[in-house]
Image 1 (cartoon, rainbow, N blue to C red):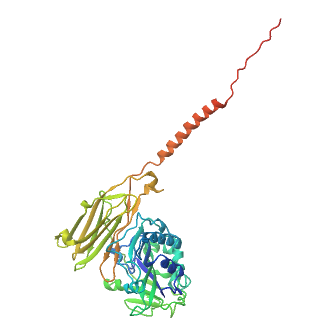
Image 2 (cartoon, one colour):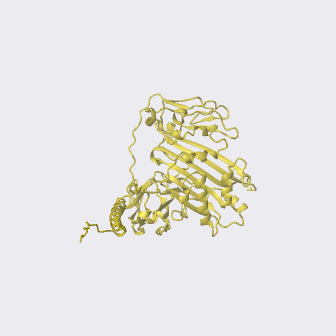
Image 3 (cartoon, rainbow, N blue to C red):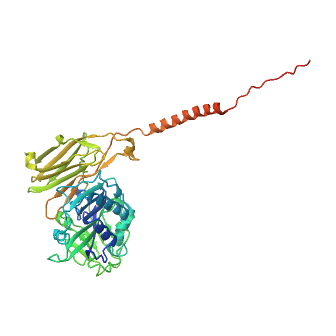
Length: 480
């Protein structure tokens, strides 16, 4: 956590035997059982995580908007169950997940592997079909209080106790980055997996910048969240607040003080809420600090009718990763323009054949499905890899444009996934693509002029057809 920017993370777990929900949220357990879901991951994100300035996130986040992926039991009705699942969670979290239809749903081949215990699947789902993954994202979706309120209701103590009492929506959404997620998976309750359990993990990550809010690098819980921690959740087995000081230690930064004194002091300071959580307000005060001005990172995105992604490997060893990207159907990609260039720090250029191990490419179908580009890459040590591909923009029907058509269309970022035992996913920034937009004022002008002409024409002819004409004159009587 840097003195100018605070990265804060909240985490809570529910574990309950499968079929016996207890404190496990019943609405989550029943919906997963009804749709035959083995594993579910749902993330709401506002903003873009800066990997260069903040490092890797403490908990896995996602790109901007909403991301949802799940492993479901296979079968002929898997697509219908997936659509039903997105509609169900759209109502549960007050989000537009119902817009995740077949046109933006994909089935990754290498990325998004199961994170649960495979033994639990095989032991208790012997008659089930081979599970399959479904992935969908809405990069344009905004995150607001309507999504936070259902998330807090899944907690055992809601937002009445523990660290969840700090979740002030007005403060939480006034940050540089915010990510909220729900992860459900099946795990084994013992070594031999005779007991199967459902694990629900809820996380919230946010990035505060005290300098922007107060002009000072000093921070406190009451200043950032507008509240203090009064008590721990009574039914929580463990409730702690951790202040990670490893960044300051590695960089040799000093001249700060933390109060009150933590229960466990060191590189990682730990406050046990079950021991002492009466009006706990953690504060960090800097005696003498000058903020280092960081240059803005160079942006990469839509360039000359194409997409460009730059991957930097700062490790001194080869790093295998998977690259996953979905592009909407209205951007027509040209696979022959796919260019991959890797240059090491000493200026050596690596051949494409030595970098790319496998490519999975699924072309788009107009108004039916997006383009999927997935690759397995071996990143050389201390190298920079650039992936670029060209596209053409499609002319949409005027009825397919959104109400804010002149703003453009949001395209979700790519996902870089490591192949470690515990996968780490890195998301690129989402893009804003401008498509050819018709002049929506012209139909209005045409309709107005047409209605005016018809009104004049119809009124005149209707008047002529319905009016009774008579001839009037002065009659003179004749006298004999």
